[in-house]
Amino acid sequence: GNSVTQMEGPVTLSEEAFLTINCTYTATGYPSLFWYVQYPGEGLQLLLKATKADDKGSNKGFEATYRKETTSFHLEKGSVQVSDSAVYFCALVNYGQNFVFGPGTRLSVLP
Amino acid sequence: ETGVTQTPRHLVMGMTNKKSLKCEQHLGHNAMYWYKQSAKKPLELMFVYNFKEQTENNSVPSRFSPECPNSSHLFLHLHTLQPEDSALYLCASSVRDQAEEQYFGPGTRLTVT
Image 1 (cartoon, rainbow over the protein chains, first blue to last red):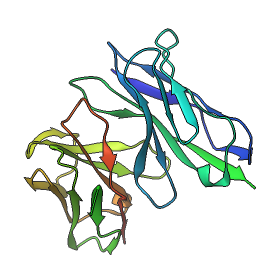
Image 2 (cartoon, helix red, strand yellow):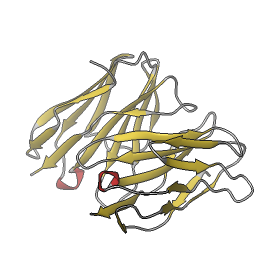
Image 3 (cartoon, rainbow over the protein chains, first blue to last red):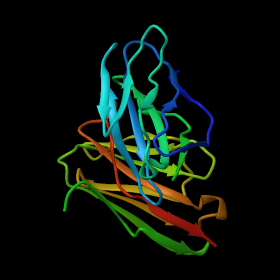
């Protein structure tokens, strides 16, 4: 079946540091890939997505590139802020199947 | 009002109570979902409704009873819950199921005492 693996958290960074959160997946066919973010006390918000190989999703300074050869969709940001502190979920969906979410990675950014 | 709304945001109930969670989406979507988010566990899909018809029930105990009267509203009726049912219950919607990104509500934080 389909699955998503994320790096273990928590990840703690200083403000303006470079962020990478690794995500790899197992799926048949050509899934769409997503990053969701959950701020404290809130639901999940779609951060960015990519629907085919080599697509780059980007939003709010975050980027992720759909790499089919390595089955990866790593999230990156060049300079994190305290307000980026949240839990980040990698997810995929294949047509005709349900969404699959990773376990989430908690990010804490210190001033 | 826009997006996906959920009420109440917080709920404390005893094990013998009956309560309901409500979800409403203002996005014109046709599919709606209930998820359970517990501490230190992955997001668990509970129910899926597509065009008001239930298409998925992930072996959820019968003390959780969903209802979808139309494509914009989704309820989760709760009765005789257990303390381990305490969690954040998230509602989501999408244009149709199994193919599109999902939009989430803020969740209902449920505590069973």
